[in-house]
Structure formats: C-alpha cells, structure tokens
Length: 283
Image (cartoon, rainbow, N blue to C red):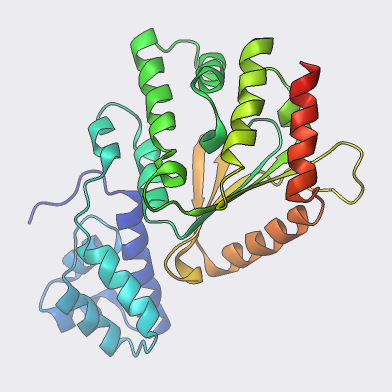
C-alpha cells in the first residue's frame, strides 16, 4: 500500500494515540511490528499516520498493549475504518491542509467551544465579515482565492445548521464585538447574525464586557473540538507560523479548566444577547 503523502490531522492523531499506547506498555516499535508480522519501518509509518491500520490489527495491538479501555479502543477503531469523504474534500489541493483538517474535525465533533478576544468566531461570521478578515490578513490573495476561503468558512457552518447540529458555545470579548473589520452596515449585519444563530437551542453565546470584573485571560483565545471521548478532544490555537493542534492529555485538561474560568467571567446568555442587541442598535 502506498504511503500517504499528506496525512490529515485525524490520521496523525490515530497514529499518535497508538504510539502512546505502545509506549505505555513499554514496548518498542520493533516489538509491535513483530506482533503484526511487519517490519519496524511499517510500524513507524502507522504511528506517524503515513499508513492506515485495519480494525483486526488495531485490536490485536490494543490487546498486547493491555489496553482495557473499550471506549478508547472503539473510538480508535472508528477513526481507523472511517472512509467519509466530506464536503471539505473539494478544497483539497486548493486551500492549505489546515482548513480541511479543521472542517473534518468539526464534522466528527461532539461539541465545539470557542473563546475569541479580537474577532467574531469563524462559525458565527457573515460572508462580508469573513471576506474583510481574509482580505486584511492576506491582501495578496487574488479575488478568486479569497472567495474560495470565504465559501469554505461559510460551508463549515453546516455543523450548526445541518441535520445533526453539534452543541456550540462561544465566549466573545466585547472588543471583538466593537472592532469594525468592515463597514458599519456590514458590522451591524454581523451582530444580527450572532443574535439569529444564538437563538437556536444548541448554540450559546456569552459576552465578556470591558467593565466585568474577574477576567485576566488576555491570551486565552482558543478553539475546543470535542472527540468521541474526552481523551480524543483537540484544542486549536493560533501560533506564529500557523495553527497549533494540541492533544496531549495534560494540555487538554489545562484548557478544559481554562475554558471554565473564562466562562465564569461572562454575562449569562440572556444578558449577552441583550448586550449584543444594544451594540447593534448603536450602529
């Protein structure tokens, strides 16, 4: 079987989890390869996401690694055997892989939580707002490529508006609700969009106003994507050279705690909607 040239974030995660199980069992890659009847380099390819693994082989490895967590094994098996080719595949080779990785993770998400300080969260953006953001950060994009980015971002909203929407909670700082990245009318439409989407039972928006005490998380912007079990969740954060995917158990625990702390410094959902409504009236 040919090796994958560009494994997805989900494929990389499966390999990483298998490596963690092997290392916890105190086995080398050569030991694990012998269990499957392959050479050590093939085992390395599986653990690096360059090669897939069948359900039979995955369960054999789990048994020899003495893993008794059936929920984890079942979730990894699903990841290994899933052959979904979602809407994001039409952008492969057109947009950077990170855009497709985020869309795929969202498709499989059990929940999605955002904390944004300077921009409206992507899932809540209007096309005009998204276009303004992309135009400002990447002004060298030709118009056709800019529109592809905007269309991709709008398509991601299917996890909120599709047949099986996920539970979504966004914490937005007042600064993001006041910075006009586009015209006054376009920004008013953006605030109205947030209000319209937050009317759904599965969507919660909370605001951190400037004058609310108890918020010291000036650098806590993040995106949390829930996995089938807590251990398989993912946190995304902007890094100097792109988006960082964080999935270590210790770090996931840290960001769960951080989200709870930030959430504790917000207005409740009803007061948040009233706050946004008032901002829209002022425009």
